[in-house]
Image (cartoon, rainbow, N blue to C red; front, side):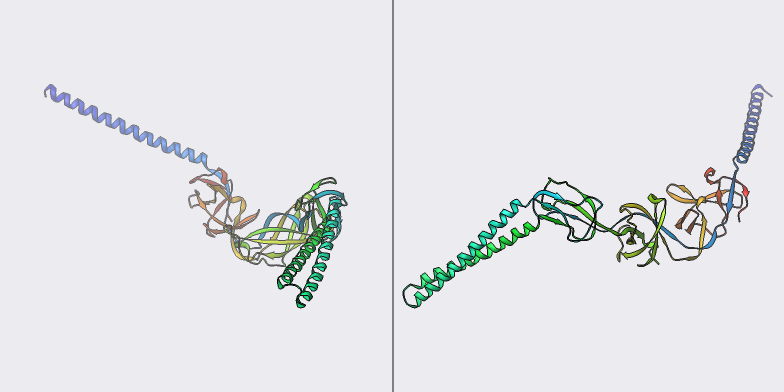
Length: 372
């Protein structure tokens, strides 16, 4: 064997040895990684509680927020400009329909009425004179003493005097109406909710001086989604909770439901009225609770089992290897205790009810409490 052959054998042997060493290192790393993964998985096993979904009959309670507002309210403004001479009421006072709330200065208005009356009397006098003149010249025309043109002139003069009388009468009535407008009166029974100005203020026509409200009945308006409108009808009772009065509860009734849904929200505007014999203040915050129709055989899960992920309601479902998979749900009615599952879950699937916030997709769990 020459030197060249010996050199080749040595190189081949070294290559084989290198391959064996590399293969051993790879195998050893794989084994160590498996052992490490096993240790990690063992450490990462999360203790949780599980349960099966339950089918029950639910009685949905619909909860809305709103405020109790007056049944009727309106702002009261003067018909004419004028300085406020006297105010007779203050905020919170009860008033009746037609009661005088304030008076504007009348001196200028009185003078204008007197002037209008004088113009009206003058117009009446002018009409009488024009009528007598026409009668006299018609007689003279019949006697051939004056021309027909002259009679026509007197006819026109009488018609003009009659028109001026009509204008003077209209002006007088307008001024007398303005004189009545110096009295600011309540349009209906109620209370003075607001008094915007004091005596001495120069009021402008159409600018509110008072706000009058009827709080003998209070109302609140809620918007019921179309999915919950079934079973809600006029006359149904509603429980109204008042946080400002230590969560006092009063009973109201549905008085109207919009016949057409508001778009694009697909909600129905619903008005609820409540008698107010004790004089509760209007405008206070209220929580309205309505009871819907009973629904049988509804698949439900505990509300606390739901996890929000990417704005989606999800639960963790346990498989046969005690690993979890995240499942996106469609939720119907829900309250503080449970949620209705519309889709995304079957009756026989075990879900995580406690400890789910520590989980991720594929996590292995350790049961502290067996599913039921």
